[in-house]
Every structure is written in C-alpha cells, then in structure tokens.
Length: 143
Length: 141
Image (cartoon, rainbow over all chains, first blue to last red; front, side, top):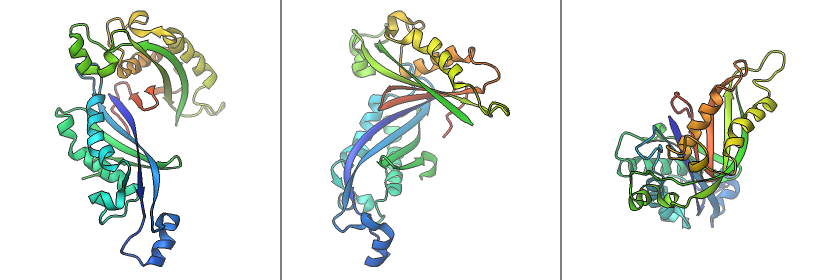
C-alpha cells in the first residue's frame, strides 16, 4: 500500500475572535491573534491519500488531486480574508484547527467527483500556519 | 521505536506506457510524459522499526545503514536515466510509487536480521510530492 502526499500553499488573513467572549476575554485568550484588523499567514497544506497502484502504476492521479485542491481550497482561500470571505467561518473562529477540519471536510465531500473508484482514499490533511505551528486531522475524524 | 536515515540521488526519468499514444500518455502523466525525459533531485528516507539493543542502545548502527543505502540505492540510481539504465524501469514506469517499492525490494534482503525491521520507504520526487511505501502493511497514520 502506498501513501502519496502533496504539498500546497496559500496566503490568507484571519482574526481570532469569538462572539461568545467579551473584548477583554478575547484579548486574553487569543493575544496578538485578536488584533481587530487581522493578520496573515503563508499556509502550507499537505494532503495525503492511500491506495494500491492503478493501471498507470501510481497510487494517486496527481493531476486529479491538484484540480480538486485548486477548486476546493486554493481558489476559495488564497489571498482571502478567511473571516469575511469564507462562509464556513461566519460562525466558527478560523483557528488553524478549524481551518484544517474545513479543508478536510471540503476534500472529503468532493472526493468521489475527483476519484470515483474505491481508491485512493483521503487519509489526512496537515496544515502549517507557520513553520512552527502544525495541525493534522484524519479524514475519519471528519463527518 | 522508528529510526530513519536519509539519502539523496539525482536521476532522470519519463513516465509513459509504451502501448499508449503520445497524446494518451500526456493526458495520463502530464508533463512527466515528455519522451525526452526530465530529472529530479530525489530524497529517500528509509525507516526501520525495532527496539534499541540493551548493550549498544541502538536499533541499528546508522553508519552501517548509511553504507547499505549508498550501495543499494545511491550507486545504482544516482546520475542515471532510470528508464534506460536501471532495471526494472526498462519495463516498469518509474513513478515515485514504483521507485519506493523497488528500493524496498533492494533493502529488504540486505538489512541485518538483528537491526530492526524495514518499516517505511519515503521517496520525495520534489519537496512538494512524496510517497510512503509500507511493504505489505496498510498505511498507518
């Protein structure tokens, strides 16, 4: 069995702020990430899929994966304000935990349109917000 | 415990199946189907799983593993055109998946019985694309 991992990048801004807390609580909880005007990151996303070899002697059709990730992640997220331009973050705070889950959800939901057969299967999404902050979610953790 | 040693080699390859037309190959493999070939700086990470020896404190002597990797991977692969110079890629498409499996096969019989079991072979074709192969084991998170 093979696991293929492809790395993508996008740049976006966000602000960590929850309406459930007061201004003061938000500042204490999120620190600099609560700055009212937001701030940005160069996000790096790794998408991993598993499977046996297909007729072309590879486990994942990289061109198909690239198209899926471009349509579901890069085009909607790149050079965007996640809080104001991505519907999924109208309520939930765009922490990288929630971002990783949202990316995994989008890929999982649209997986069969890119890969109609039983293989490959989406295994996990790993997102680096900075080189030091990394978040990973398994496809089976997402509904 | 898992220990990993990394080696690098540079090689050229082309991904195409001889029974398909140029157009079909291009659709299937994209630019990797260019009949003239192209190259990568491949990076290979070989991981062994085992317990540290009670006296040496090591799963396997990494110096010894380095020598095996140089002999089994770097010597045959480095600065070669894989399709023309490195069997089985005269008859097998040298995708990163097939390279990982070939490396697994080259190592499996060469590792000392006492020094941990081969656990994974990771092949980076570029920094943005890599394959993990686990032999007959399923993918593990």
